[in-house]
Image (spheres, helix red, strand yellow):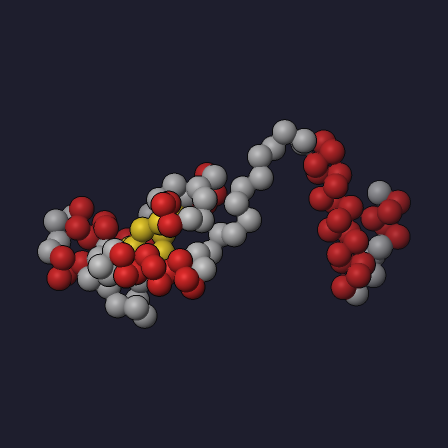
Length: 108
């Protein structure tokens, strides 16, 4: 706590020092916690590949019985979704990705 108290200024260095102190204290008390994939967002290259390989089709629209034409999304209106949620340990890799329309991604 003394180290934390000494770094109470609001400049970038002090904020970084407080973050470091808290992070280390956390890992000392909870050493067995598994870290999740730190990359939550799919990269532009991953998004392009996913979009092309999926044929621009929202998987959940197809599951609802829409035709492929109805399920098509545009480049400016789609989401790259984690099949296994990132918050549940899902990796940000193409094998864990799918194309969803904004409606289906936000309704999950």
